[in-house]
Image 1 (spheres, rainbow, N blue to C red):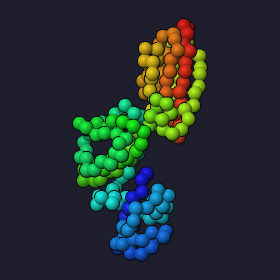
Image 2 (tube, rainbow, N blue to C red):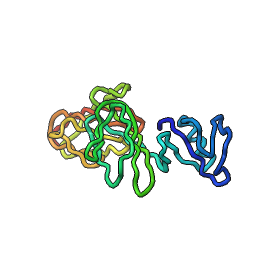
Image 3 (tube, helix red, strand yellow):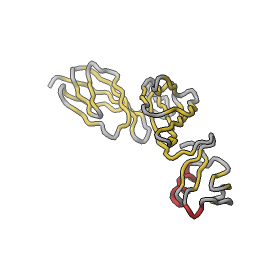
Image 4 (tube, rainbow, N blue to C red):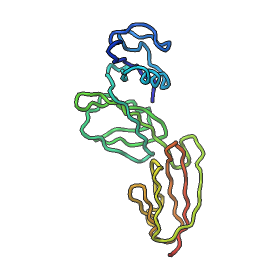
Length: 197
């Protein structure tokens, strides 16, 4: 989550001016953008919401992770601001991952502003700055493997492995490669030697 301003919405502090957690507030809005740890502390102590430095009152923040080359469609929202830092593009209601990095998008829907923090990972060589872990395994044609818990799966050999949701099905003999992003951000490369059943 990027640094951003916060607004205290707790009724008893509705017009608060002063210091809280060493952060200056004027009329219940922080005067400066604050770190993620302080945002969490503030949200745990008071009813609060994000108050973007761009003048938008953010009522919800969500995180999205894309892989370079993948895209996701946003529908039923209006784009208010994009800070892509070269990591992604937005065109025709599609967010597309371009390069390792991050940024955010502020959208409006039904009268509320939502900040979407976008992280883009590069699976091609462990390009997100971390070492790619490698695992090898033998499988038989027709076997399945549930990879739930992995956040994003890319199939380098679709002629040998198919997947639906998080379940892989081994379809033909050969050596298949599948890459995934674990929920902790770790990139894992799986090499499967597939033989007839």
